[in-house]
Image 1 (cartoon, rainbow, N blue to C red):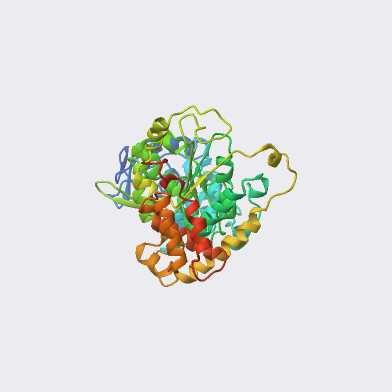
Image 2: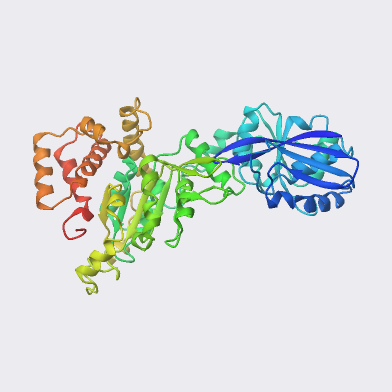
Length: 511
């Protein structure tokens, strides 16, 4: 008897429906074709034990299973449930009149219980697009798949529940989730809040500007000055994600298998990889491509602590994704593209010892050692960072002060207002949503300076020996500062403040 059941494969952040054809004939043997990987080939042992432990048998006949399209490589253990159901229906052990109306995915344990799978959300989206009635998957993944409307999503704990459903027994009900309620839940309660930060008013101001314009930022200061603490609080002042952004972000985390029994992600991601990370782990890839840290930070923040400690080739592979806001991974037979629109926040010590510019510490590094340390960061990468700010340690008086600082929610309101101004400004432009994404043409159009501002900028560039690359960055940041003040024009005080945020361009920092 020949039977067809349906599963799904995920490539990049999109799913492709896989038709599993099961044919049982006279003879003996188990033949699995259609480019399965080793995890799928081993499934026969898991299926045999799971069926036996639930009162069914793997028939002692010739079983031929084809996974179509046959030229597409299938990987992972998520097809166990699909194959097991196909074998049971084809051998006549259970009914399966409506089995071809459902997508069925799940990894089987030997007792028939189900283990979680990756990519449940993209699979559910594809199932709805292709007109399937429902989707069976492990209970662990049901919340992310149930985001998709007009699709019956069944979270099951073991193979027996699915068998009972097709036999007309049991009372398995589809999971329903109110996407909007899920999205707005706990939105106003960030884990880290700027009200916890004592002092550092100038750095908070810098963070606010970076968040308002989507600017990449680097924090330079000695150990213990609060660089990591400040960076962790940046997502709390970014504008809330839109439903579209939340869906995009959830999709990527679903593909990577990083969602832990949650539905729609409503908090912006914050990723902080260790400096020993490889370039494949950072940008994505591998023999079976998976999203890297820069894609996991999509619509959120990527924090690189101790930037000069990262391997130079790792930092260099990040240059193109920073510009294009997506990363393309090519293999001989296919190409996948992952979105990677993130805010880069980096921190570093000014010298190997960390205390070069600290007035209260003994100088333990020469200018030459500091120069060599800073030169680990290439000019082209630094060129993509708009704001450089020096972080100094907080004095005892500020640390012991009991006065509560401004909360993240108050700062976020100002940031959101500035972003709304930018959305209106760039509404007719494709792929430009905030100031950091402006190119030279847009800067000339939207950052027109009066004579006072031009004179100020000219004097600053000459006196501070600012590099040519600093010019555009200063104008972008000044445009964001004027948006925060709801000013239509960039004024001289905005330029003056923006000039302060180019520490690494000054003579004596980088040659």
